Image 1: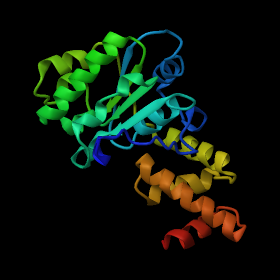
Image 2: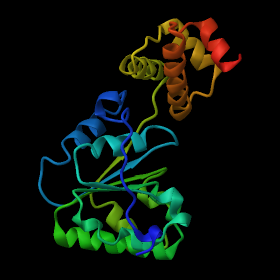
Image 3: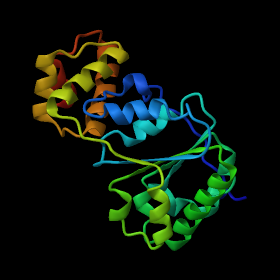
Length: 227
């Protein structure tokens, strides 16, 4: 196999587990993922949401302590469909951003074939994420759309601003520093409020507070972000 045909090594971020995920209005989805392996046999779990809502975080969390494979389909131009060969030997197969391959027949056929192999072996769990429900994605293969609706389909609901603040405070606590409500509200008013941006900033704040041994205050944030 060439490099692009080999399953990607799964390196899990230390901060993307179930403990660090703020649930908000997604309790049913969260509970279902935590019990995904309670029943034996093949199962399909499909999660869709707006961008940067936490889909990949949940894939990483579900992969903890499992023989898992993670395929970032947004990078499909750097890969080949043959990368899906052999994935039926894993406990968990994660296909992130499946909508990225819609209209690419070779990829659609490869994923359809993967479904059939996983179904026949009846062991693995298949977690899939997307920006929309299966029937709203312009796939070329109707049979693939049918397969995607076999299991549970959940919308990952975006956090309210109040819940975003709580999510940031949880991330700060787990990272070893404090984010006061006052400072958190200031941050939400001054920067892009998507969670990917906010969590990236939290990593920056963690480094800054540790390096300078300072509490995170509004003046300190202004200094860090050059506001």
